[in-house]
Length: 276
Ligand SMILES: NC(=O)c1ccc[n+]([C@@H]2O[C@H](COP(=O)([O-])OP(=O)(O)OC[C@H]3O[C@@H](n4cnc5c(N)ncnc54)[C@H](OP(=O)(O)O)[C@@H]3O)[C@@H](O)[C@H]2O)c1
Image 1: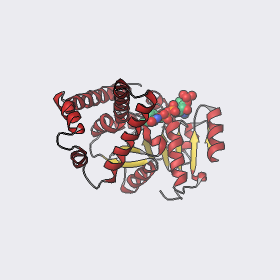
Image 2: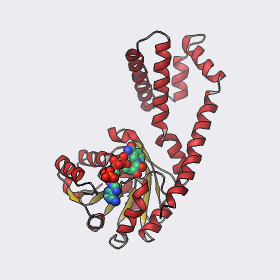
Image 3: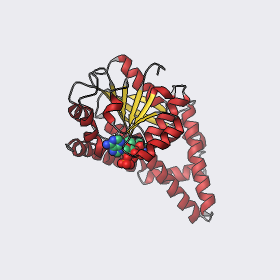
């Protein structure tokens, strides 16, 4: 993102804070970043943390920036968008990080024909280790697309999808995904305790193993399948465990869970889109 572009965040909560930190770490000047919220104490905190211009009036903020990031909870998004109808300029890029709300609902609430990028970040974004799926509606131009990608890359990696319903698949995979790995860590910890380890030792071993395996996969030298094959010696301990997983249809269990998340994402989008 160029330092001449100004960006305003509506909602000064955890996600906005993570993205602002990321932008500042990338060298974006704090005087190009503005923030609004209904919580004045939180705004004072953000002002102290980042030395930003703060607003209690969302439309006043929207009038002053090139990019508006909608960083409020999905349930209040329709109210916030309607507040922006009269002040949002036609060339302002709107980026929504609100989970589950579709672009045509945001566009309807904003009064139509607006350049909107809908994103699905995940919680590791709070540690700059996120991965975000992005979708652009038909009013977003190439420059704005680049800008939206840059903004979300400040908290990790960003990947575009061509069809909006693919964001439901992103939600089922990386959006909800951190919880799947936390469940794996919990389950491995419990199993380690059952085998005689202390809870603290079992938990530490589980967490560091998840982290190390993730880092090896992320290094990209070999595929996850190749990495797994390498640590699975014939007739060894890992093979015994993997065969036990496979006997109980581990892949089917994962596929069913992600299908449930995908279906629920579609249902929630309809429910949240009806919050008029
Ligand atoms: N946290 C994550 O890891 C994560 C991951 C993916 C997507 N998201 C999405 O990111 C969005 C923000 O999440 P978050 O965790 O940052 O939420 P958050 O910490 O609750 O922040 C939202 C902020 O918006 C404020 N707010 C409420 N109504 C407002 C209004 N009318 N105008 C301006 N500000 C208003 C809230 O104030 P009050 O607290 O006083 O209501 C709060 O300070 C959500 O839509 C969520 O779905 C978050």
